[in-house]
Image (cartoon, rainbow, N blue to C red; front, side, top):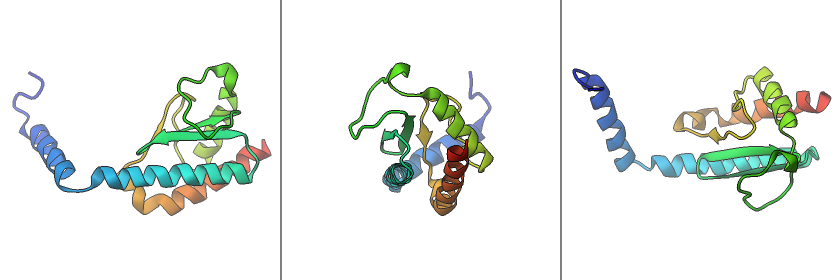
Length: 134
């Protein structure tokens, strides 16, 4: 079987599940997701970049070339601009952020991001500077 003779993997799994039950991990990462969505929305709006930031809990997505405040399920490519997303993802990479490689994928927050949120926000602003200069 997959885990035969692999007690370290099973121990790590049990430790993770115990932590998820005993600590407010989901609450913390969901708060980070909301903070990120609010920040992204604010910065894109300030720069008059047409975009929708949507998500739930710790999961977010950026849709460029589309504006709206309600969650939109399964946007079609003709309703927004995937190429602009790729330009933003490239600018983010140049600023030290790794965005999902495809426009239909999501950003996932983890507890490790908590101590780096100020840096993430700063680098996103750098990415927007480069993105707007293109």
